[in-house]
Amino acid sequence: MVTQARDLGVRTILHLSSSSGPGGAETVVASVASGLNPSRYRSLVCLFRDGWLRHHCEQLGLETHIIPINGMLDFAWLQQFHRLLRERRVSLIHAHEFGANTYGTLAGRLARVPVVATVHGRGYYADRGHRRLAYRAVSRAAAMVVVSEEVKRFVVERTGASARRVRVVYNGIRTAGSVPQEIQASLRADLGISDEERVVAAVGSLYLLDAAPSVLGACPPTVFLVAGRGEREAALRAQARSLGIDARVRFLGFRQDIPALLAMCDVFVQPSLSEGLSIAILEAMAAARPVVATRVGGNPELVVDGETGLLVEAADAKGLASAMIRILRDPAEARRFGNNGLSRGSTRFTAAAMVREYEAIYDTALRLPPRSVVVDRVAG
Image (cartoon, rainbow, N blue to C red; front, side, top):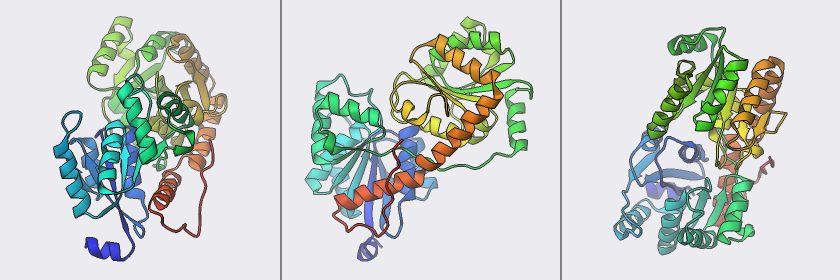
Protein backbone atom coordinates (compact mmCIF):
# COMPACT_ATOMS: atom_id res chain seq x y z
CA MET A 1 0.00 0.00 0.00
CA VAL A 2 2.83 2.38 0.85
CA THR A 3 4.49 1.69 -2.52
CA GLN A 4 1.23 2.37 -4.35
CA ALA A 5 0.79 5.71 -2.51
CA ARG A 6 4.31 6.76 -3.51
CA ASP A 7 3.68 5.76 -7.13
CA LEU A 8 0.66 8.05 -7.17
CA GLY A 9 2.81 10.95 -5.99
CA VAL A 10 1.49 11.02 -2.42
CA ARG A 11 4.18 12.04 0.09
CA THR A 12 4.15 10.67 3.65
CA ILE A 13 4.39 13.31 6.40
CA LEU A 14 5.30 12.18 9.91
CA HIS A 15 3.94 14.51 12.60
CA LEU A 16 6.15 14.31 15.70
CA SER A 17 5.00 15.79 19.02
CA SER A 18 6.83 16.07 22.34
CA SER A 19 3.59 16.28 24.30
CA SER A 20 0.32 14.40 24.21
CA GLY A 21 -2.03 17.00 25.62
CA PRO A 22 -4.76 17.90 25.83
CA GLY A 23 -3.67 21.39 24.81
CA GLY A 24 -3.41 23.93 22.04
CA ALA A 25 -0.24 22.59 20.40
CA GLU A 26 -1.61 19.06 20.43
CA THR A 27 -4.87 20.26 18.87
CA VAL A 28 -2.86 21.86 16.06
CA VAL A 29 -0.91 18.63 15.47
CA ALA A 30 -4.12 16.66 15.01
CA SER A 31 -5.75 19.38 12.91
CA VAL A 32 -2.84 19.63 10.47
CA ALA A 33 -2.31 15.87 10.26
CA SER A 34 -5.98 15.19 9.53
CA GLY A 35 -6.49 18.21 7.26
CA LEU A 36 -3.83 17.66 4.59
CA ASN A 37 -4.93 17.14 1.00
CA PRO A 38 -5.06 13.31 0.68
CA SER A 39 -4.23 13.47 -3.03
CA ARG A 40 -0.85 14.99 -2.14
CA TYR A 41 -0.03 13.89 1.41
CA ARG A 42 -0.50 10.98 3.78
CA SER A 43 -0.11 11.59 7.53
CA LEU A 44 1.12 9.45 10.38
CA VAL A 45 1.77 10.60 13.94
CA CYS A 46 4.59 9.72 16.34
CA LEU A 47 4.55 10.67 20.04
CA PHE A 48 7.05 10.48 22.89
CA ARG A 49 4.35 9.31 25.29
CA ASP A 50 0.78 8.06 25.41
CA GLY A 51 -2.12 10.37 26.21
CA TRP A 52 -5.03 12.36 24.87
CA LEU A 53 -3.39 13.10 21.54
CA ARG A 54 -2.97 9.44 20.65
CA HIS A 55 -6.64 8.72 21.32
CA HIS A 56 -7.71 11.82 19.41
CA CYS A 57 -5.54 11.00 16.39
CA GLU A 58 -6.77 7.43 16.30
CA GLN A 59 -10.36 8.67 16.40
CA LEU A 60 -9.50 10.77 13.34
CA GLY A 61 -8.25 7.65 11.56
CA LEU A 62 -4.56 8.61 11.77
CA GLU A 63 -1.88 5.94 12.09
CA THR A 64 -0.22 6.73 15.43
CA HIS A 65 2.96 5.38 17.04
CA ILE A 66 4.39 5.79 20.55
CA ILE A 67 8.19 5.71 20.86
CA PRO A 68 9.14 6.55 24.48
CA ILE A 69 12.19 8.73 24.96
CA ASN A 70 14.58 8.77 27.91
CA GLY A 71 17.27 11.26 28.83
CA MET A 72 19.12 13.98 26.97
CA LEU A 73 20.39 11.84 24.09
CA ASP A 74 18.47 8.61 23.64
CA PHE A 75 20.16 6.58 20.91
CA ALA A 76 17.60 3.79 21.25
CA TRP A 77 14.87 6.30 20.38
CA LEU A 78 16.84 7.49 17.35
CA GLN A 79 17.21 3.90 16.14
CA GLN A 80 13.50 3.12 16.52
CA PHE A 81 12.49 6.40 14.93
CA HIS A 82 14.88 5.89 12.01
CA ARG A 83 13.35 2.44 11.47
CA LEU A 84 9.86 4.00 11.39
CA LEU A 85 11.02 6.58 8.84
CA ARG A 86 12.41 3.85 6.62
CA GLU A 87 9.51 1.40 6.95
CA ARG A 88 6.86 4.04 6.27
CA ARG A 89 8.92 5.76 3.57
CA VAL A 90 8.53 9.12 5.27
CA SER A 91 9.16 12.08 2.96
CA LEU A 92 9.11 14.85 5.61
CA ILE A 93 9.04 15.22 9.40
CA HIS A 94 6.82 17.92 10.90
CA ALA A 95 7.89 18.35 14.54
CA HIS A 96 6.17 20.31 17.31
CA GLU A 97 7.61 21.66 20.58
CA PHE A 98 11.21 21.71 21.81
CA GLY A 99 11.99 18.02 22.31
CA ALA A 100 10.41 16.93 19.04
CA ASN A 101 12.00 19.85 17.18
CA THR A 102 15.52 19.00 18.33
CA TYR A 103 15.28 15.20 18.11
CA GLY A 104 13.26 15.37 14.90
CA THR A 105 15.80 17.67 13.27
CA LEU A 106 18.70 15.42 14.31
CA ALA A 107 16.90 12.33 13.05
CA GLY A 108 16.00 14.08 9.83
CA ARG A 109 19.60 15.04 9.19
CA LEU A 110 20.78 11.48 9.80
CA ALA A 111 18.07 10.02 7.55
CA ARG A 112 18.31 12.82 4.95
CA VAL A 113 14.64 13.64 5.43
CA PRO A 114 13.59 17.33 5.45
CA VAL A 115 12.12 18.73 8.66
CA VAL A 116 9.58 21.44 9.51
CA ALA A 117 9.87 22.50 13.17
CA THR A 118 6.99 24.43 14.76
CA VAL A 119 7.57 26.49 17.92
CA HIS A 120 4.31 26.99 19.84
CA GLY A 121 5.51 29.18 22.71
CA ARG A 122 8.43 30.81 24.44
CA GLY A 123 8.54 29.90 28.10
CA TYR A 124 10.17 26.47 28.12
CA TYR A 125 13.69 27.15 26.84
CA ALA A 126 14.46 30.86 27.05
CA ASP A 127 16.79 30.80 30.05
CA ARG A 128 18.79 27.69 29.21
CA GLY A 129 21.87 28.23 27.12
CA HIS A 130 22.00 24.75 25.59
CA ARG A 131 18.39 25.05 24.48
CA ARG A 132 19.01 28.40 22.82
CA LEU A 133 21.92 26.85 20.94
CA ALA A 134 19.77 23.87 19.99
CA TYR A 135 17.09 26.10 18.50
CA ARG A 136 19.69 28.09 16.60
CA ALA A 137 20.84 24.81 15.06
CA VAL A 138 17.23 23.79 14.33
CA SER A 139 16.60 27.09 12.52
CA ARG A 140 19.54 26.34 10.21
CA ALA A 141 18.83 22.66 9.58
CA ALA A 142 15.01 22.74 9.36
CA ALA A 143 12.24 24.99 8.14
CA MET A 144 11.40 26.73 11.43
CA VAL A 145 7.83 27.93 11.95
CA VAL A 146 6.40 29.94 14.85
CA VAL A 147 2.75 30.57 15.66
CA SER A 148 2.83 34.36 16.15
CA GLU A 149 4.91 37.41 15.28
CA GLU A 150 5.69 37.88 18.96
CA VAL A 151 7.08 34.36 19.26
CA LYS A 152 9.17 35.02 16.15
CA ARG A 153 10.65 38.17 17.72
CA PHE A 154 11.43 36.25 20.87
CA VAL A 155 13.06 33.31 19.08
CA VAL A 156 15.17 35.59 16.89
CA GLU A 157 16.29 37.78 19.79
CA ARG A 158 16.99 35.01 22.30
CA THR A 159 18.49 32.29 20.09
CA GLY A 160 20.25 34.32 17.42
CA ALA A 161 18.29 32.57 14.66
CA SER A 162 18.08 34.56 11.45
CA ALA A 163 14.69 36.23 10.98
CA ARG A 164 14.82 35.08 7.34
CA ARG A 165 14.77 31.47 8.51
CA VAL A 166 11.73 31.80 10.79
CA ARG A 167 8.26 31.90 9.29
CA VAL A 168 4.96 32.71 11.01
CA VAL A 169 1.97 30.43 10.48
CA TYR A 170 -0.99 31.35 12.64
CA ASN A 171 -2.93 28.58 14.34
CA GLY A 172 -6.41 28.00 13.01
CA ILE A 173 -9.48 26.05 14.05
CA ARG A 174 -12.51 24.46 12.48
CA THR A 175 -15.76 26.15 13.46
CA ALA A 176 -18.20 23.94 15.34
CA GLY A 177 -21.43 25.70 14.34
CA SER A 178 -24.18 26.98 16.57
CA VAL A 179 -25.21 25.11 19.72
CA PRO A 180 -28.97 24.52 20.16
CA GLN A 181 -30.65 26.33 23.03
CA GLU A 182 -31.85 23.09 24.59
CA ILE A 183 -28.25 21.86 24.91
CA GLN A 184 -27.23 25.15 26.51
CA ALA A 185 -30.19 24.94 28.91
CA SER A 186 -29.29 21.37 29.85
CA LEU A 187 -25.69 22.36 30.48
CA ARG A 188 -26.76 25.26 32.68
CA ALA A 189 -28.92 22.89 34.72
CA ASP A 190 -26.06 20.40 35.07
CA LEU A 191 -23.75 23.16 36.35
CA GLY A 192 -26.37 24.66 38.65
CA ILE A 193 -26.54 27.99 36.80
CA SER A 194 -29.89 29.79 36.52
CA ASP A 195 -31.06 31.68 33.45
CA GLU A 196 -30.64 34.98 35.32
CA GLU A 197 -26.98 34.43 36.16
CA ARG A 198 -24.15 35.81 34.01
CA VAL A 199 -21.34 33.44 33.04
CA VAL A 200 -17.62 34.10 32.73
CA ALA A 201 -15.66 31.25 31.13
CA ALA A 202 -11.95 31.39 31.79
CA VAL A 203 -8.64 29.60 31.74
CA GLY A 204 -7.78 29.45 35.43
CA SER A 205 -5.17 31.69 37.02
CA LEU A 206 -4.61 33.18 40.44
CA TYR A 207 -5.11 36.66 38.96
CA LEU A 208 -8.52 35.67 37.62
CA LEU A 209 -9.75 34.70 41.08
CA ASP A 210 -8.13 37.78 42.62
CA ALA A 211 -10.31 39.80 40.22
CA ALA A 212 -13.49 37.84 40.91
CA PRO A 213 -14.59 39.56 44.18
CA SER A 214 -14.66 42.96 42.43
CA VAL A 215 -16.67 41.49 39.57
CA LEU A 216 -19.13 39.91 42.00
CA GLY A 217 -19.44 43.22 43.85
CA ALA A 218 -20.43 45.01 40.63
CA CYS A 219 -22.35 42.14 39.00
CA PRO A 220 -23.53 39.82 41.80
CA PRO A 221 -25.33 37.22 39.66
CA THR A 222 -22.09 36.03 38.00
CA VAL A 223 -20.71 32.51 37.86
CA PHE A 224 -17.12 31.71 36.87
CA LEU A 225 -16.40 28.57 34.87
CA VAL A 226 -12.71 27.75 35.29
CA ALA A 227 -10.66 25.32 33.23
CA GLY A 228 -7.73 23.90 35.16
CA ARG A 229 -6.28 20.48 35.97
CA GLY A 230 -4.02 18.76 38.49
CA GLU A 231 -2.00 20.84 40.92
CA ARG A 232 -3.20 24.04 39.29
CA GLU A 233 -6.82 23.16 39.97
CA ALA A 234 -6.08 22.33 43.61
CA ALA A 235 -4.39 25.71 44.14
CA LEU A 236 -7.29 27.54 42.49
CA ARG A 237 -9.87 25.73 44.61
CA ALA A 238 -7.97 26.67 47.74
CA GLN A 239 -7.78 30.29 46.62
CA ALA A 240 -11.50 30.40 45.87
CA ARG A 241 -12.24 29.13 49.37
CA SER A 242 -9.89 31.67 50.96
CA LEU A 243 -11.60 34.50 49.03
CA GLY A 244 -15.05 33.23 50.04
CA ILE A 245 -16.19 32.91 46.41
CA ASP A 246 -16.15 29.13 46.00
CA ALA A 247 -19.96 29.05 45.67
CA ARG A 248 -19.66 31.26 42.55
CA VAL A 249 -16.92 29.20 40.85
CA ARG A 250 -17.31 25.94 38.91
CA PHE A 251 -14.11 24.02 38.22
CA LEU A 252 -14.52 22.15 34.96
CA GLY A 253 -11.34 20.10 34.62
CA PHE A 254 -10.99 18.66 31.12
CA ARG A 255 -14.17 18.94 29.03
CA GLN A 256 -15.12 17.74 25.57
CA ASP A 257 -18.08 20.13 25.23
CA ILE A 258 -16.19 23.42 24.85
CA PRO A 259 -18.49 24.83 22.09
CA ALA A 260 -21.53 24.36 24.34
CA LEU A 261 -19.76 25.92 27.34
CA LEU A 262 -18.72 28.93 25.29
CA ALA A 263 -22.19 29.31 23.78
CA MET A 264 -23.75 29.81 27.22
CA CYS A 265 -21.14 32.25 28.53
CA ASP A 266 -21.22 36.06 28.42
CA VAL A 267 -17.48 36.67 28.26
CA PHE A 268 -14.33 34.59 27.85
CA VAL A 269 -11.21 35.48 29.84
CA GLN A 270 -7.62 34.44 29.10
CA PRO A 271 -5.40 35.90 31.88
CA SER A 272 -2.13 34.44 30.54
CA LEU A 273 1.33 35.34 31.77
CA SER A 274 2.85 33.79 28.64
CA GLU A 275 1.23 32.68 25.41
CA GLY A 276 1.96 31.45 21.89
CA LEU A 277 -1.23 31.74 19.87
CA SER A 278 -4.16 30.66 22.01
CA ILE A 279 -6.51 28.00 20.65
CA ALA A 280 -8.85 28.82 23.55
CA ILE A 281 -9.19 32.42 22.37
CA LEU A 282 -9.81 31.23 18.81
CA GLU A 283 -12.56 28.93 20.08
CA ALA A 284 -14.16 31.83 21.96
CA MET A 285 -14.01 34.01 18.84
CA ALA A 286 -15.61 31.20 16.81
CA ALA A 287 -18.43 31.14 19.37
CA ALA A 288 -18.90 34.93 18.96
CA ARG A 289 -17.92 35.56 22.58
CA PRO A 290 -16.25 38.82 23.67
CA VAL A 291 -12.72 38.16 24.94
CA VAL A 292 -10.72 39.69 27.76
CA ALA A 293 -7.06 38.74 27.46
CA THR A 294 -3.70 39.83 28.76
CA ARG A 295 -1.35 41.73 26.48
CA VAL A 296 1.19 38.89 26.19
CA GLY A 297 2.44 36.60 23.45
CA GLY A 298 0.19 36.33 20.44
CA ASN A 299 -2.93 37.55 22.28
CA PRO A 300 -2.79 41.07 20.72
CA GLU A 301 -2.53 39.43 17.29
CA LEU A 302 -5.88 37.74 17.95
CA VAL A 303 -7.79 40.24 20.09
CA VAL A 304 -8.19 43.74 18.68
CA ASP A 305 -8.56 45.95 21.76
CA GLY A 306 -11.89 47.76 21.71
CA GLU A 307 -13.12 45.86 18.62
CA THR A 308 -13.22 42.13 19.42
CA GLY A 309 -12.61 42.39 23.16
CA LEU A 310 -10.36 44.07 25.68
CA LEU A 311 -6.65 43.68 26.44
CA VAL A 312 -5.21 44.22 29.92
CA GLU A 313 -1.74 44.02 31.37
CA ALA A 314 -0.49 40.70 32.71
CA ALA A 315 -0.84 40.06 36.46
CA ASP A 316 -3.19 43.06 36.81
CA ALA A 317 -6.19 41.76 38.77
CA LYS A 318 -7.72 45.24 39.03
CA GLY A 319 -7.53 45.83 35.28
CA LEU A 320 -8.87 42.34 34.62
CA ALA A 321 -11.85 42.99 36.89
CA SER A 322 -12.59 46.36 35.24
CA ALA A 323 -12.60 44.78 31.77
CA MET A 324 -14.95 41.98 32.81
CA ILE A 325 -17.30 44.43 34.54
CA ARG A 326 -17.38 46.68 31.47
CA ILE A 327 -18.46 43.83 29.21
CA LEU A 328 -20.95 42.34 31.66
CA ARG A 329 -22.62 45.72 32.13
CA ASP A 330 -22.90 46.48 28.41
CA PRO A 331 -24.62 43.64 26.48
CA ALA A 332 -24.66 45.70 23.27
CA GLU A 333 -20.90 46.17 23.34
CA ALA A 334 -20.47 42.50 24.25
CA ARG A 335 -22.45 41.49 21.15
CA ARG A 336 -20.40 43.85 18.98
CA PHE A 337 -17.14 42.44 20.31
CA GLY A 338 -18.37 38.88 19.81
CA ASN A 339 -19.60 39.42 16.26
CA ASN A 340 -16.40 41.22 15.29
CA GLY A 341 -14.36 38.39 16.78
CA LEU A 342 -16.37 35.81 14.85
CA SER A 343 -15.78 37.69 11.60
CA ARG A 344 -12.07 38.12 12.30
CA GLY A 345 -11.55 34.49 13.24
CA SER A 346 -13.50 33.05 10.33
CA THR A 347 -11.49 35.04 7.78
CA ARG A 348 -7.98 34.98 9.29
CA PHE A 349 -7.55 32.06 11.67
CA THR A 350 -9.12 29.00 10.07
CA ALA A 351 -7.81 25.45 10.03
CA ALA A 352 -8.03 25.44 6.24
CA ALA A 353 -5.76 28.49 5.93
CA MET A 354 -3.29 27.02 8.42
CA VAL A 355 -3.14 23.70 6.56
CA ARG A 356 -2.66 25.44 3.18
CA GLU A 357 0.32 27.32 4.56
CA TYR A 358 1.92 24.19 5.94
CA GLU A 359 1.34 22.38 2.65
CA ALA A 360 3.14 25.22 0.84
CA ILE A 361 6.06 24.86 3.28
CA TYR A 362 6.11 21.10 2.69
CA ASP A 363 6.15 21.68 -1.08
CA THR A 364 9.16 23.97 -0.77
CA ALA A 365 11.03 21.60 1.55
CA LEU A 366 10.35 18.68 -0.79
CA ARG A 367 11.19 20.77 -3.87
CA LEU A 368 7.79 20.07 -5.39
CA PRO A 369 6.42 22.30 -8.15
CA PRO A 370 4.03 25.01 -6.94
CA ARG A 371 0.33 24.33 -7.17
CA SER A 372 -1.78 26.18 -9.70
CA VAL A 373 -3.66 28.06 -6.98
CA VAL A 374 -1.80 29.66 -4.08
CA VAL A 375 -3.71 31.31 -1.22
CA ASP A 376 -1.61 33.73 0.83
CA ARG A 377 -2.07 34.20 4.56
CA VAL A 378 -3.89 37.36 5.57
CA ALA A 379 -1.75 39.08 8.18
CA GLY A 380 -3.39 39.66 11.57
